[in-house]
Amino acid sequence: MSEIVFSPFQIRDRTAPNRLTAQAMEINSAENGGAVGNATLKRYLELARGGWGIVFLEATSVTKSHLARQHGLILSEKNLTGFKQLVKQFKSVDPDTLFMIQLTHSGRHSGEFSKKVKAYPDNVSEIPLLSEEELEKIRHLFIKKVALADEAGFDGVDIKACHGYLGGELLRPINQRKDRFGGSVENRAFLISSVIQEAVEKFPRLLVGSRFSAYEGIRGGCGTGGPGEILEDLDDIRKTVGCMVKAGAHYLNISSGIPALTPQITRPAKKGYFCRYSHFRYTKKFKEWFPETAVIGSTYTTGDLTSFTHAEENLVKGHTDFVGFGRQNLADAEFPKKVKEKVGSIHFCTFCGKCSKLLKNDQNVFCREYHKSSPYL
Ligand SMILES: Cc1cc2nc3c(=O)[nH]c(=O)nc-3n(C[C@H](O)[C@H](O)[C@H](O)COP(=O)(O)O)c2cc1C
Image 1 (cartoon, rainbow, N blue to C red):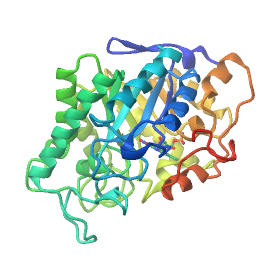
Image 2 (tube, protein in one colour):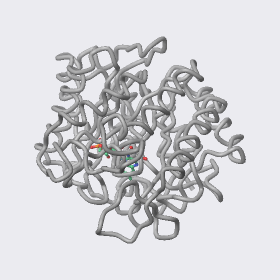
Image 3 (cartoon, helix red, strand yellow):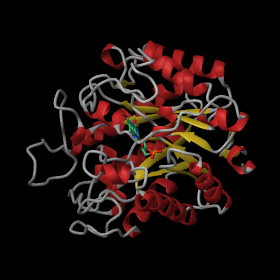
């Protein structure tokens, strides 16, 4: 195994002990009101023992009004003590792994039980359109929640702009709003990049960045060339992400697709080589375009150790700085440690799809192939 995978990497003045990243995975197991409870603690302490370089806390809502899941985490004053406890306990197990929180607003992908809202007008849905004033309030809400993330002790924040949620919806070429949140590249990137800029300026301890979908696979979506285009053309998303870099982003976390619409892009099947290699290709492009910014790639789950072959190759060639695992971190939270120390048998993701199904059905998520019932509850 090449040493590069387990070599440290510096983002600004912080060092991740290795390149293996546990990407955010919603386990949808918060307690009432989106609070951190025993289930969330158990899950992240398992990851803390796993020897990862970076761990992202699952998508955590900045608001209680627009939630994707009934048991999703909500970062609020009321819930702050729980988040502080979570970071403290995580750090007592592993002080070195960078522990970051992903902040989200679910927008039009809020659940039926919650309030759906959309970022730009379309004639396909009855979902209410957010006004400029409402978007401005949401922008301030993100900044407020970055302050809470800092107070909780996280090493960094991820301003979520991937997978079709509000942040990502705003970035699309099809977002031709006539106010400061739509139209030009700068306006479409305004919410995300202005939150990044304020976070960088006001909270110097935090690493700040964003996870976005390089290509969504929908007409006028991210990674297309215009409002009416469906084909991949990365020029627009390169410029949009350029605004985040200009705002001071310390890292870019590259994903793709929209799980609710184009899941095969976001989560390639075991033999979904084309989609997996497309992720690698996008990440390589962003690393070439923004060489000074740390880059995290996605979709390294392969169900076997070829994930490490991919990781090693992409790191050695300089196509990425970090390699991100989603389903594999759920299938075996201690995957890095087991590979490195050659101890214990690794439980590989089998691509059974049950974790995605649990999430879709708004149930508590865990790896059903590994545990018969949730190990977290
Ligand atoms: C159950 C489940 C929950 C997920 N939750 C999140 C999340 O909270 N935030 C996010 O950015 N991506 C989320 N994802 C996407 C994963 O982080 C990852 O991008 C995806 O699984 C593809 O990577 P993989 O091939 O390594 O699994 C989730 C995926 C699944 C299956």
